[in-house]
Length: 190
Image (cartoon, rainbow, N blue to C red):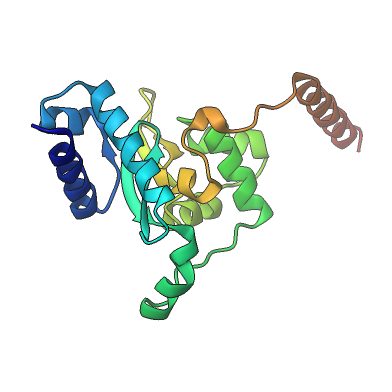
């Protein structure tokens, strides 16, 4: 199959699916190596991004690709569609989401151990917002649910993979640990 035909097939698949499709799956459909699929998709993304008369682009999300509207088209989309769902991430939701993002897969019990308070509400809200999902069950008594982040999380925070999340400074981690130990000691003294 010629290159332009393969691009047309990829475009058709990504448009029709409406969600991200893994490059390996696209490779199987086209019966070409994954590297070739990635090269074609990167070339397509450049073409979309450079063309001012195009309203779509390709987004890479952790080895998967999705066709989506260019951000500069947002105001026009609002005119035709109902307002996009807006949600506010409170401090407790952000704290819970951060724990899940950095510790995944993680159970509610582990989150509560880190936060020191119940996380039922926060986890339920993050599930509603499609920022986290159930990724399985822990092989332990009671088989607690394990949580991880979603592609929507990556989209919302503008990263293509979890490796792009900022790394915490090890000195700061030690400082936080010392502060927590002091707080625990103060509570015990009271």
